[in-house]
Length: 51
Image (tube, rainbow, N blue to C red; front, side, top):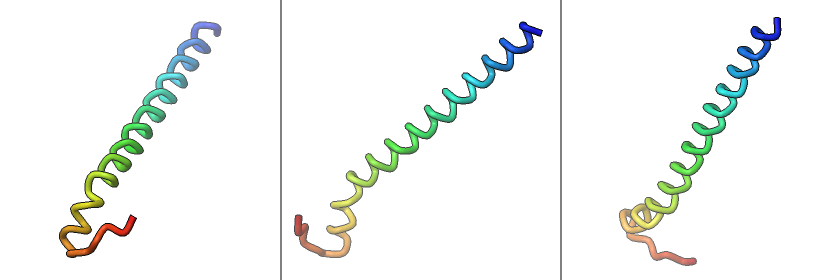
């Protein structure tokens, strides 16, 4: 019984780390592309940066 509990506990930690890691990767990707592509959108629409 103890061995089954440890195996399930290990799988829970693995799933948590994978989901947390993937969510961080997606978050940083959207943040990076948001800042990287912001000026390209302004240039494409011939707008001035008013910040």
